[in-house]
Image (cartoon, rainbow over all chains, first blue to last red; front, side, top):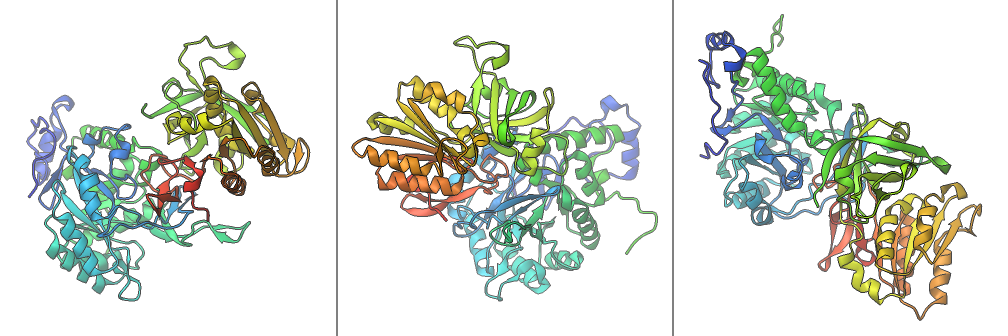
Length: 344
Length: 283
């Protein structure tokens, strides 16, 4: 297991020491003066320690190097790299993106260099970072998911896999893995068996009941859940009566989907015992805290990386400031939502 | 030189004819790092409904703004100018911004008209032909200035819809041996597409060698590339596309190009915006 790769330990003087601290310990911490209270915002998922809960989402951060001139990559909790398939994929024709109100549609078509070239061309740079590297994996058949993971298993410096199950299974007539609980279980079980690292499963929001899929992934051995992926949407150019995106339908992301994502993270976190990682329209520390309070043990910043690359590190600072002000550690906040009347 | 992402102040946002504007930003870090043909991503601040930055060609850089005095030689540029047309939601919002307002500026970006790549071809040429369609003119001033500095002879072919759309020509005048203007409605210069007089010029000088540099709307660029190909002249084109990040991360701006013997998608923001014409696979 990869452990303790992360940055130096914070000077913790309080009684409450991160994960697993009790309410009493939290109160003890709260009695200390502000300057002596150093909040712990490390998070541990499936035995992997992350220096903070702010990660960059797959597909919005390339292979991290693209942002190296703009932000200190070493201060991120983790980087989830662009989805990798066993073989290289060339992607969809243009236009691939279109801006909508407070959001963005994309149908990139999972263009990527393939698992082998990822190991030789992209991973060496990522290995130089103090930040954890999570590799997003996708395929159109269970065999190819396994084949991709087996290639990636050879690489050093990968902390975990994130299984993208929002792809259609070409053999089952194009049914999307993530919208059929049985297919979800099948692919997660096969991937888990193959994986040398913890397996996080990224759920699709394009389902009626997210808890069914959360449980299916948990039952099949997922170490954690990441949610959500994009909502399927579309936009039309009325002047030409043509779709704005060549693929016709496309994934909607950005602040427009945040309330929907938050609801699903809340529901999933209550349905499973494994950790949940929240994602969907997060653009500020307050957004991130909402997901954490709803039950997420970490969050991912996606679309905001594209228009404001400084967002993720501002969120790290914002969470620290909030924890200092409230005299709480991150673990005190996870799932701390107070609901007056318990809801099913 | 590396890119910088800063919040910068607007010095001027001057309306020109035909819904065009000239935006001047106080951006010393970006302006001093610019190479010809590069672009910037401009972010409208304080609007949660408009997320993405807008890609804009860097029209000009200068040490001191024109109305306040002339720059001294050797002074590092600190003003970055953009010539743009308010057409979409984003550019219309940018057009409403006033002096003193702030925007986010990520620049300089992309692979532009880089002399280390075109100089051998430029030296073989008798003349450099700058070919602009509409607001595509904005991408050609800095390369034209650099070529003039290097002593190359240049000629501008500039076409637009109407006379009001022929903006920015004054800056090109001192750099060119001659300028040929064309409008689709005949309100100025040649009546018709600019590629027609370009074709006549190439046909009339069949014994001469040219290097073409072009920027403009798709059909105009494609016609220019066809002409360059049939008259066997090298041609560089500056491509435009919707962009998500401008950094090469989102792959939203990819176009089909010929690469190492096969077709592939490449990023306009990173491998481009400037490509050799023969590399581009037209839809």
